[in-house]
Length: 270
Image (tube, rainbow, N blue to C red; front, side, top):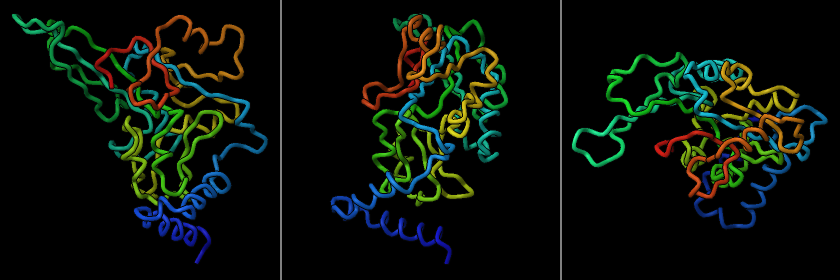
């Protein structure tokens, strides 16, 4: 039996006994060992995560729903070709005008994301005369400072890095799905081939080598702005974004403290 299988079996045993082991010091020690010593981020040798603080900003007004970011993410990260799995995706929001006689300021809200927005969006069947507002919202892992997913993982396979990313080590993931259920943003899924949890990593293999995430690289309208709070430059795009916009995070009431900031977002977006 190879070491990978043995390790996975041991972690599976640990996870299956979570119901009564979680409170035991031994279980906590085992999770801590995996999280702090054994998991790997895939960063190159010499990369110091304590010297960086990554942040993603999204200007909703700039997004045209072209889907290039979704396609680039799928290709770069070898995400399953199935239309059910995405590390990043785009949602289209249509807010109708209120019906005659209604006292409401806005009418029905519809949200769609055909194939995650990868192929763009077909024309809406809602007549233009009935639309109050329409816009696109890119979604991805919210890079929570207090990530529910890492707290829910029984074996430490999901972990927070000092530079602000939230990663999954597939070598230690036992496929229990607890992190998927814990994520309030719907950003995680079970890889159909490896049966391990998967999500956006900010293209960690790229940013730790001085490159931009694939989605940022291909965006034709600069909807996505990516930067490093610990290494600001003159006229830094992230600093300019925060200075010039009223920024929001998704579901702020949850206290997860996301590191993905949105500008020009509507209250209907969750």
